[in-house]
Image (tube, rainbow, N blue to C red; front, side, top):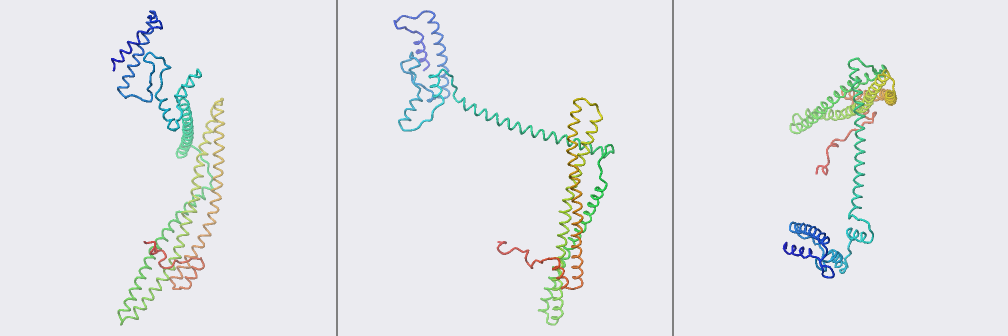
Length: 387
């Protein structure tokens, strides 16, 4: 195949004009250089065909022999298009063909796929700008957080070592300390009430089992039927009154738990936010005071103005949270007195009626505080739920 192509190239190297005479010397040199270039290109194409095989979409049919002009070259893709059209198949316009037609009709260079590449590049640039904007925003947030943490840590260390000053509201600090002490004591009451509930529940279950045993023995022991029967009835009555008392104690425990772990905890959460705001306020106040002592040039004045704005922002936040804490402490105290008055009265009346053996008073106590007992087996899942 290479020999045939060399012979073809040799044939092309001897051009003959229309009169049959050979061309001039200058024209021969030019044609010889062109033939060498064409031969090198054909050799590269031959190597590509031997490596990857022929590409039928890019091959062309040359009419008029090897010396024909470019007008005799017919791309095979156009023949394929004609066949598809004859079969009634719609062919999508090719960007390469459109570019060739445009370049022939107008002297405008056309690059296939340039519009698509431009669209993809513009969309990628937009995505890059958006991601860059998000990254810058996150960096600014981290920068502000780091600066604020540094100032607050510096203020905290200064207060610990007695070098820095802190804003103190003596009346409010005393109320906060009373609340924390009250919460600790109420937690002790809550834990003891839960322990009492667990022990009393075990006792009621034991009384119920003991009553069933006495009733069974009264049936199997005729000589002690009456004695076992009396004790069985007594244990059953105690078990019933114990379940009523358990309802009252459970209601007491639930109310104390709501007061301690929800109402007081919510107020303490606001107090924690107030203390953090106080620390930030003192940190920016100390920063502003330190800047005000130094020299007053243009750069320093700009920094002082920015520090003044931050100081005012944190001052407003501190005063707002201090007002919130004062209001919550006031309402918490009123709510605590109201709830504990009701729960302590319930606990006293229920315990007194139970140990006095006054079943009517015990039931009346539950009705007074709108406590409804669950029927036996209410907590047990139904047969359908078990399945």
